[in-house]
Image 1 (cartoon, rainbow, N blue to C red):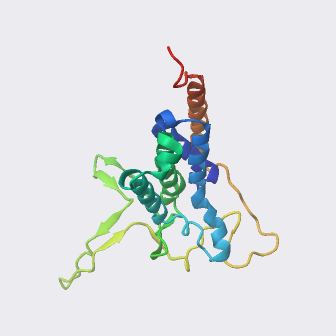
Image 2 (image 1 turned 180 degrees about the horizontal axis):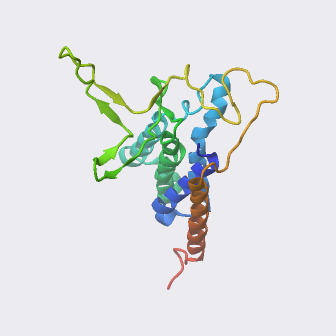
Image 3 (image 1 turned 120 degrees about the horizontal axis):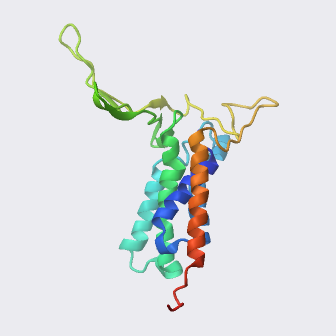
Length: 231
């Protein structure tokens, strides 16, 4: 599964694309921290069993953040963000929401272990771990979401239609281990705790790409003339 470091790397790439003129070290810290938030539910799992990948990986977190930023910046008379931090604050807020959604949660959703997308309203881990492409014999295909019409029995009756989005079970059935809470229930003495950095080659590729993009953008930003500098 992607490590916390990989989550932050994806968020920094999102920041490079979205921050525009607000791109600076402070903004990167804020966006990076936003991507860290979902993984804090490893500690929630110590209080409510098996809520890692559930308590803060629920889509209600980024949806709530989006609603809050939209209300403050678009609907409210006198934006708190804009009044306190100016345009920089608004840009960073939106980039942080994107970093949280795509870097913090989205990356885990497309893994074999998945996330509990609508917890606690609907307790079900979902894994959108599949493939998509084009085959000369099949045509366009995808296995991320599979819909079945139930088929038809020999007596002419058909089963109920179903949608398979990689349902894995509830928090009673699924425990996503972590270095903080490796297994369900009390941990035995001497339990192995693993805190990954990169488990796959593409994890390492993302880390290197993120570091390179961040380094180049910071050099260009910090070397550029400020708003008060004339040409």
